[in-house]
Length: 166
Image (cartoon, rainbow, N blue to C red; front, side, top):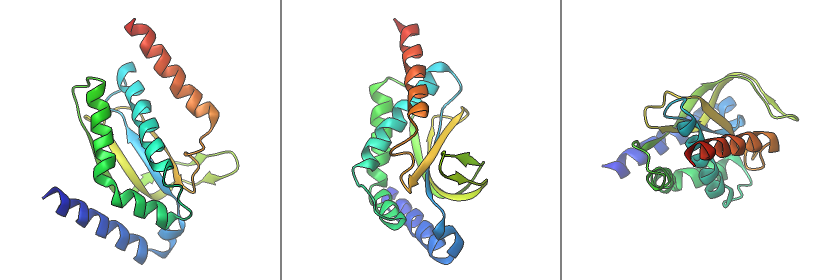
């Protein structure tokens, strides 16, 4: 049943990209929504981000189509990475993966500014999905070589969380 659902999601996503010419020119985004705004859940969001970026980065896509194909062929594995990581850190919740076209605010990547609008995205919702979110562009690979400042901020949040646990 789960495989049928994933197949249908993939088919809808690929067909929407095919029939929406302008959408096909837009980037593919990764969007992670934390369970809550607690320090622990926000730190977990960044741990999940790093695991997923490490996994997607191995594919080294040369086009948006290659990035989409890699993601869709590996949706089950991506969701497993999320849930194994959550279990490893003893969270009381699971994550779920969605794909589709979602609204995003404007995002400035320094050399490239993406205006607010609807973009194709891989969305990972952690637990209740009521916390602050994080997103980037998978293709072109702006988050695979993300801003040092953004990664540094996530690292500092994680360190802060770990200090409270010691």
